[in-house]
Structures are given as C-alpha cells and as structure tokens.
Length: 401
Image (cartoon, rainbow, N blue to C red; front, side, top):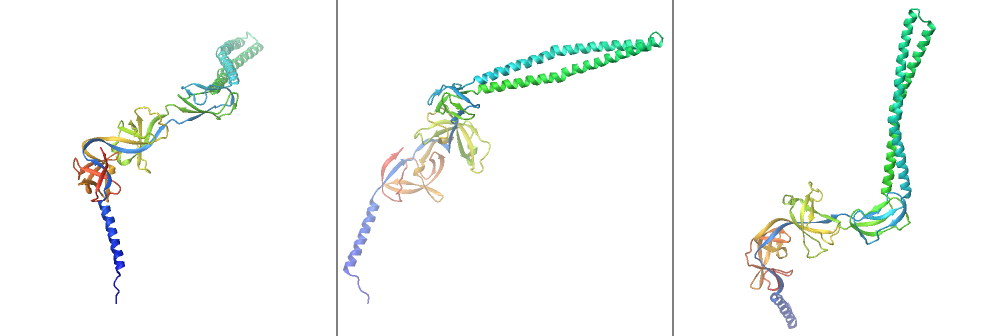
C-alpha cells in the first residue's frame, strides 16, 4: 500500500516551484543593456585589409677596414651628424708615407718607359740602320772585288779579306736588329708592367688612406661609441653604432591572393598601428610583387607613406586598408551588430523595447563594415550585447552614429 506524501514535503515542493517561477519571471522581465545603431544610408570606402611592417634602413655598425691607432674622435653618443661628417680619424702618417713612396716609384717607372720609347729606341734604331748601310756597302764591295779578281786585277787574299768584312757587317746588322726588337718588345713590355704595378701600389695606398676615416653614411644619430682616442683598433672592430634619421623608406604588406585583381599601382591606402591608437596615415601603392608566395597564399605589396611619420621605425607592425571602391548612399552596418548562424546572418532588431532576430543579406566592404542587401530598411534600429536572446526586453545604454 503506497504512502501518501506528507504535508511538509508538499509545502517544500510548492515553495521550490514558486521560487523557480519567481526567478524565471524576474529574468524575463529584466531588461538587457544594449548598444544601438540606426541603419541609414551612408558613404564609405570599400577596402582590402592586410598587415605588414615598416621597412627601411636599420642601424649600422661603423668600423675600419684597416688596423691602426685612433687619432681623434669627432662625434659622441647622441650627436646628430650630416651625411659625410668625419666621425673618427685614424693615425694615417705611415700610410701617407707609403703613398708618397708609391707615387715616387710610379714617377720613376713612367720616366723609364718614356725614355725607352724615345732615347733608347731611337739609339737602337739608328744603330740598326747604320749596320744595315754598312752591310750593304760591304756586300757591294765584295761583289766588285770578285769581278776584278776574275779579270786578274786583285789577288785572292784581297777577295777573301773583302768577304770577311762583308760577313762581319752582316752579323753586326743582325745583332742590331735583335737588339732593336728586344728593346721594342721585351724591355718595353717589362717597363709597362713596372708602370702598371706602380699604379696598383698607389691605388692600394690611396684606398688604405681613404679607410683611415669613418664618415657618416647618411644624416643620422650616433647611438653608441665603442672606442676612444689613442686606442688601437683591428679590422672590423666595432667603432660606432649609427642610426639614419630618415630610416623609414616604405611599408611592406602581404595581401591575400584572391584580391590580386583589385590591387594596382598608385592605389590609395590608409595605414595604422597599435603604437599610435586612433591615428590613420595616407599612403599609396608603389610596387606589386609579380609572383605569389605559394606557402602563404599571398603576394607582397610595397606602399609609400604620403608624409614622414615621427615615431615610425623600421620593423614596426602596421595594418593597412587598401581602398578598392567608393560606396555612396548605401545602408551600412558595423560588423559588431552582425550575428552569424551556420551560413546565414542576422541582427537583433529593436521593436517595442524588445530584441527580435532578423535575417539579413550583407556584403563585407572591409574595415569591419557591411552593406545591407536585404532584410533591413532605412531607419531600422538594431542592437548588440553578449546576453541577447530573441524576444528579450532591452534598454539602450548608448547609441552609435
């Protein structure tokens, strides 16, 4: 036989039900605080969003290409110097002496070559010509002696003597030719080689002398100085850390490949950075990479900033909005008022102090904005809050323009 529940248990159950009903009714009756936005026709810019960095010149270490003692330091940490300013001078006396000696040796080599081209060559040429004349004369005399001998006019000894004189003159002529050719070829080549070597030695000394100074590669600031006067430094040793004043040259961004057809040179863009909240800077596209990064599915774009931005430094992260179209007199809503469910979109429409789900058709135009293609009309008031549910009572906390 089943026992009937006691009166006490029935009263407890009834109390629980009443409390639950009270909590539910209170929740239903409580108004949710929301932000509201009135849908109306507006003008806007359609953009492609991308991220990137500020690109440009980095700080550079200044050093010597030759070892030596520091003679003087003309710039200190924190100094702003112009391009070409002499920052550090190395003791260059030994290199200057080497240059003077090399220049002297070059002058001597050039003088020897010039003398060879004029005096020595001319002397050898005259000797060769004289030997040639003598050999022709002796040959003619010998032939004459042979004819006279055949007629009985001279003795055989005289003919033999004439032949020896002719052979000697021919030998002297051949020696003169060899000497002349030697001067023209071998000695001249050697002298020219000596001149070239002397010129190389001079250039080496001039190069070494030019590297006894460190000059500012651009207008900039000396961030750090690592050496002092009279200190000996080695090749490549850190001397100064230099930072160019106008280090920013451009912006580099990676853009999704599916918008390649919407991006072109000279296109306007807007640049922002979290380092400068609320600031927007005008820029334009300067260069578009002619290839796609297959791993990222992006292509590189370079932009030039319209004005110099104080505080923009190399490698600073930035966001970029590339303007692809101008939107005029369209219903536009911010992304934060748009909700998504599966493949559909909806908003919460305020009607009679309650929020109702309203399906909408939208198209994104970048910068967190969407054009309303259907589902809303001008003047409609929509709202957003993390706690919103269909049919909830709402109280407008703030209205956005």
